[in-house]
Image (cartoon, rainbow, N blue to C red; front, top):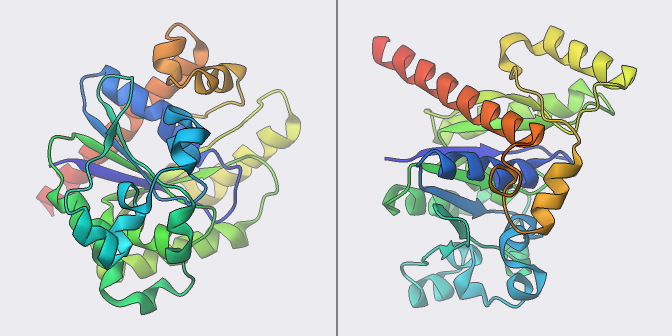
Length: 269
């Protein structure tokens, strides 16, 4: 059964979509079939692989919106993910047809809270599932947490605000009431420029507050990520010798090591 990781934060520009895009490249390159679920109505992850013209014109029945719409889902019972040009990477796409379903107060949505979880439990043929979430904690992020095994919180090293992260942690705690197996895999420092004192200071502060829950790997603000994205390929494939590709692979290895340790701890317990 696939391991499912969702990336959440309540603000935009954190690197959620970019991390999903490039991390999928590492997993695919290491022989793991990877399913990307785009749970953001903006569809940035989908557009990264297929382009905006294609994604924006997709009918609702070919997107994640079908899971939340009884009429659409009945007409598309299998909702097959789309194959990308990168071997081993598939995407369940999203566009603005998902927006009406991304409501606040998701706990009041009844059985829709489990829609994505049911899909993830039934889908076969994948080793890793990554869910990209919108920059809020509404319905789409909520259903992602209900469906996932683990949460990663991308955090850029600026505008430091513990209150914002506390809200995310509280949302995870609430989601665990419906999904007791959900675990915080780690905080991921993204878009970091280690030459800037403010970024260095932020990272130190984050590690002092959250300790080992902050991942050792730090993802920089690197041009290689953007160039690869513009070519619709993960950096691990477009520029495999780059530092950006190496750090992406380091992140993938670190996440799997943490997952392995967590699974061992659960068995012992």
